[in-house]
Length: 482
Image (cartoon, rainbow, N blue to C red; front, side, top):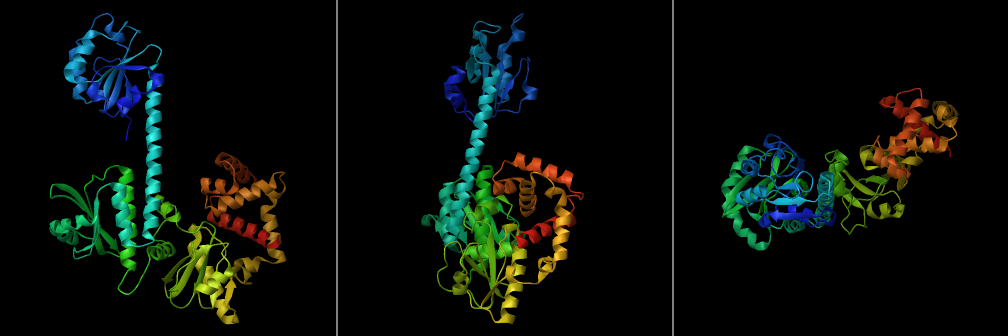
């Protein structure tokens, strides 16, 4: 939300004085427009604080009543007049016109440059945006934490965050959960809209007036089928923060409704893990970032076994789901192997440590390790213990020589350790500067400088996926030798 005119007036460093419009200080200041034009309205969008020194008024005072009327019709936030520049004080004609048309008039002292007013509005806008993002992130995190205990907790949390009422409805329109419980009486009034939504398809949504309230209804859809509906009322969902929060709730509830069935106590985090393994959730998407606050911290490992999900309580930070005929476990890379033995019946395969962008590869690694475990009769095998695979084939004197030849231009540099570490972090983060820099503990500009140097040293093109793969394998072969 943009800052109000009152917030600017309360900024001591600006030394602003309100002359008219005491009842207009609540107006939001969308931007600051400095203009000495006789009619600046063609260049205004509305909501601006228009600043002027009246430099063109010195020789002949214009019709200030018409000037203010045009600005009032443009719905500006207010007028700021720079006093003691071209006029000793704010013209009385301007003040009278502002009073007549209900426009806030602010006197800007000579000691306050217009640029300072513009900078303060920019600062307040940036501060509000940052606080909004922080609130949205915190709200999404709490929403995701609530999801771990089931759909009703998601509905309760969403109602609290929005300050309205929320209904979780079954496909036939019956109430599954209401927050607060008194909101359940709203359901019958939405029956006709639910019928229209069913006919419109799984991607449709609607906003309707019901019992004097504005209600938005969205289907909870997975696999092209509506598993239920989410209705929100008592509040206007506006702004990107609110919409992002509602979208996150829709995703979480859709997963929960898909996973839930009579006699199964499926948890939404199992649905999230399945979605991550299937690639249905993008780990780089902001919504997924909120989900990751309740997932194990990277790096993680994937374990695979046959059999059913464990029925007992799970250790903190461990996720389990049934996926494509296997039981799959996701846990932090430093989890003790005994945990997997307690959760899963052998044979069990365990992947190498990976990031969330490499879960599909980790699942494949765990499957290969599980097959080796079944063949050898071991209760658990780790992927990095397997002699096979491309890295296993390269773990030979010839493979080592190839790795050394590929990395030789970097090895010859005095800063070889930093460059090699930067190259590995960059490749591991799939080229994401912020993630790679954070892993290295350096500023992203430092990483960019190092990567420019690496590009200059290496004969290949780092934008070529084949070349990046060769470099990654060379680095992994070296790690295996160290």
